[in-house]
Image 1 (cartoon, rainbow, N blue to C red):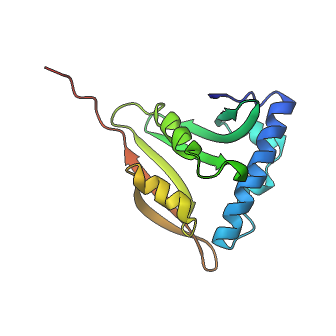
Image 2 (image 1 turned 90 degrees about the vertical axis):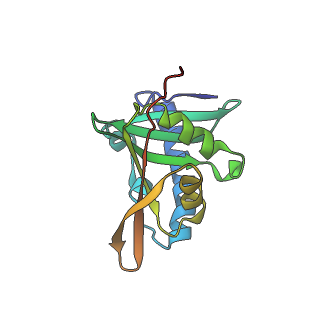
Length: 157
């Protein structure tokens, strides 16, 4: 079940931070870069992020989460994380599809990941995202920005 995470609730924000640590440490190993910004978050930085957080719960356990930020022009998927104990169960796909619901037809969705984070790159490609910018964030470490435009709904005649 996917539901909002109340980042003003200390227990919920601490559960989110624990999940984030576990998930982004795996990405850090994959891309060979230990200074991924989410690894340095605190309850304060989460609360000040301006992001909306949603959790995927397996019974009572937070198994995954997604955070989005929306402007009038685009939807940014700021974070997408899955607890390592829940990898390869379709949770990332469900969270990605859930996040996409916030984009209005014709709106651009933007998400980024470490270029060498193969599971994430494959996930975004599988769901119609196209690689755009490649940004060097440290020597020999790049981040790829993926884009997808939400289709306009066709009216049936």
